[in-house]
Length: 233
Image 1 (cartoon, one colour):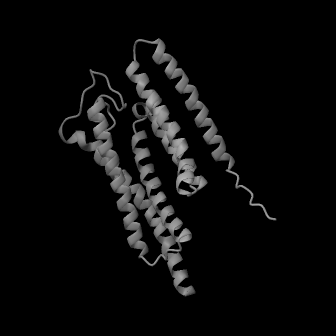
Image 2 (cartoon, helix red, strand yellow; image 1 turned 90 degrees about the vertical axis):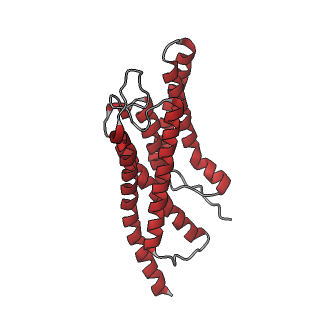
Image 3 (cartoon, helix red, strand yellow; image 1 turned 180 degrees about the horizontal axis):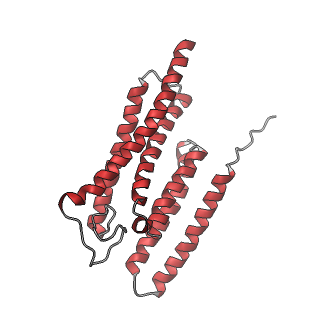
């Protein structure tokens, strides 16, 4: 009787997950201790705790999707997702890379367009393999749909940032002239007029650019696959 061996995760993913998990748990313990023992900077500590919990939630997402929907996220995509979340939640917010490195936010937005588009094409490939849905739709049309969805998600993200900024008085949309950090002080100066829109529009453009880059590559693959399929029939 043959037994199906469980596929082992690649070492880079195992190491990355363990490193991020234990680092976040350690930082969460320190943040909770400081929150209970210090009287100042409680707002900053609460913000840090929220970001750390969000990172732990992201680490759980692949297993959750597999348990509920029986869909296994590719290991490379798993690694990309947790690396992206770590770069945003931990490096960007907790370690304030947004404030210390001028282009950190721009790099992550371009990367997010790449990730979202990549996920879109993985879903298309999954539907083709699991449900034998023929790829009779034009590769150009599928690529345009993926790019449009990536841009729409980027727009929804910006709406979320605006809402969080409005409710919690944060600087996710970087409308402050004197700082690029997510949290700002009372003496920081806001941008005025057209300049206040620069970050939002730049982020959407970078989302679009990243998605188009992936779509161009995947379009060629889909076109080639479709031609091979047509020859086979």
